[in-house]
Image (tube, rainbow, N blue to C red):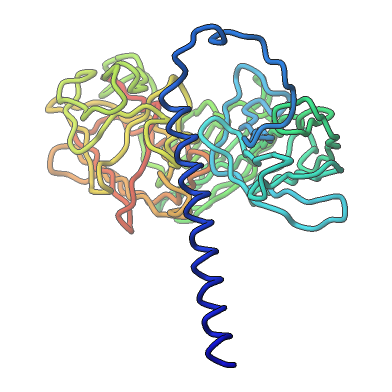
Length: 401
């Protein structure tokens, strides 16, 4: 009896295996026919007659952008954000999937009424929830949005939404940071449209960090020989250790204008090592790259503040820019290249000849740049490195040459 059962079991396995092989062979044959195409040209451009769901999937997307002007509307000044986490929930609040925004700012959730692997497979109400990073806010207060999907028998995937989620803008809370040298105190004034919005006393040999309101457009420091004025960007400002005689109009008072190097004119290809002599400066271990050249590289996208190119420290090794004649080092935008290196520490060292001029450490993020503005009047070499040897992104390097 046991032998008969074993024979039946083995026969069933063989039969099932045979059926599976036949199914696979037929499927392979259909795919081969599709790949080969049809000899008859009569239906090459025929209108579709059988409207109904296919076996394909369609992305249902949530778009997230860096709201540079903080108005909650996606405008020309704003930029798509990469690496932002978006979660999908069903109508009962059950978690379904997580997706991160791609270099174009889209978090994509596959939708299909036929594919079990799709995140969205049935009609109903869904909630799209954008995870707002610490120190940021959703400028349109719309980080959670409900969208209803209905059956659509004639559509590509059998489902259709009443609309896509509205774009979600994220605005960064700005701060101004720095360190005072030993010596006389100074005063930091936050300005907006030519008016003083607030003032802060800066004590000798002390670090400072102050939040900056949305209406502020510049900060001014006066006293102790540290006088300087910086136009604020949409990002946190790091002044480093304040040094006397800040750069204003040019190196050594020569009156040379400030120039901004955005790395957009280094190459028309996706990637290129920056050659010495570019913009009148010598470069070591810095590459210029299109913001979306490398897949899943959040910092290369989010660290790009102008044009479509950035520079980065190749393989995470120390990099330098230099010139024999002294030049002014005003500022640069610095970003961590990858979300996996969030909180990386950058070290920026400057020399005038063989004499050290400045040495500052800056905490980096892959979500937005830090506007590092040492405003050094005369240097001949600047060295950039990171504590844990991850790549660092540069954009809008401003010098006086």
